[in-house]
Amino acid sequence: MIDFLEFTSWKMKETSVYSFEHIAIIVFALLISFSTAYFFRNLNNKKSRIMFGIISLFLIVSEIYKELFLSFIVYKRYCWEDFPFQLCSIGMYLYFFIFISGNKKINEIIYTFIATYNLLGGITALIIPIDIFNQYVTLTIHSILWHTILCFIGFYTIFSQKCSSDGLTFCKSSVLYIIFTVIAYILNFSLMKVSKNNMTLFFIGPGKSYIPFFSLISENFGQLTETLLYTITVMCFSFLIFSIQKQCLKNGNYVQLKNNVR
Image (tube, rainbow, N blue to C red; front, side, top):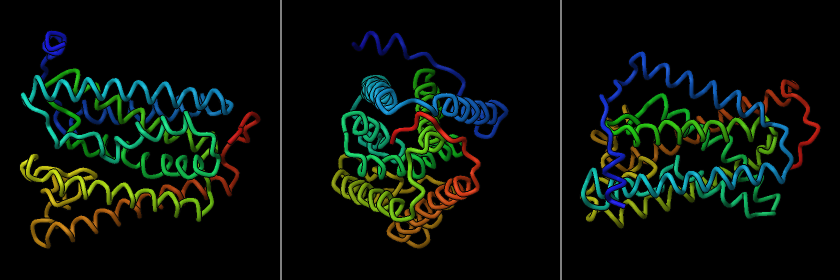
């Protein structure tokens, strides 16, 4: 196994943030995810759930590779800071849940979460690449592909109208986000020592924030203030995505789907 990891540890010149290459990656990722999602919008429920299952399996396998690569090649130890429980990691678990779940009400809440919070995470990570670009080819490809998939699934749930335009359902998906945030904060606090105070799952405290602007909030007003402000900001931008989606549905801008089965 280690031989395989070492064989795939190809290095590259790290892509500069907001360089031509970075902008090209953003445009390509959003275009391919948007157009592909529109192409697959008419999948029936059975095929849609199979797609979610396949994507979930792919993400799980690729995440295992990433964790092993970081542990044996990059850090020579397990890196708790990269524990797969970020906002962008949640989709890996939720996609699998949709694959095995037949509960339409719960799935609708999850679809709405995917179409708002998860989509926001995918787009934001591409635009503000805190840890996407690095010196390793496979890790860089993994990160770009991962967040492109998040965008694809987010757009797909919107185009297929599997997510809800009901305000109450969005509120329930927001409760789900808050639950995940609380779990992330507990993990951050619990693993603070072993991670040398670098645990920032969901990019919240008590570890130091690395997000532009919010890192300044943390330094000047404390980590708790930064955590609350960041959480509220994510919820506001997710609500903005939800509002745009709802307005489009209201105006009839989405194609009526013949084979749509929630």
